[in-house]
Image 1 (cartoon, rainbow, N blue to C red):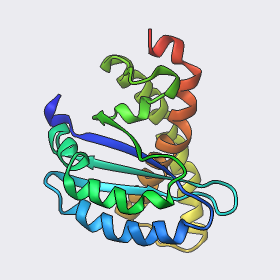
Image 2: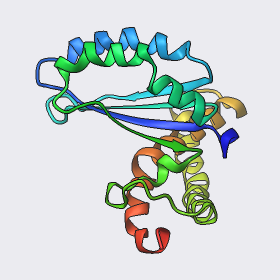
Image 3: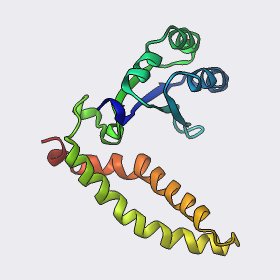
Image 4: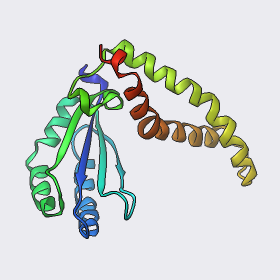
Length: 183
């Protein structure tokens, strides 16, 4: 389990009018995070202006140990204290190994489905997307006159598939099949 990688999903509920202060704070903490031992990558999902106020940050590290070391480090604690005046709620996060974050349902607490069920669910979601997305994206790319390039086409298609998996498909799919998934 140690070498499967680990992810943390952090949600920050930001007070109205403090979004720009928070963005500046992100500009400070992101480089510090990137220089932490075992850092792989991070993604920031920003709120929809005038509609939502939650920032979601997904950070991946090579091991749970390196991720925990960062999350519990004095550097991060100091940075969180600095941003605390911008939060509606306290800093909230969940550490997951591998792809566990795709199977995160708040109603299930920290419970994680067994790996074989994660495999079947992920495969059953990716397979139709891997058939459908190229059928939609390739004609669109040619229509907007982007020349055919296998690597670029695959980059765009896989990016769309991963985006849909993380933000659209898996949150809804796991809710739909949660009785079987968490049994």
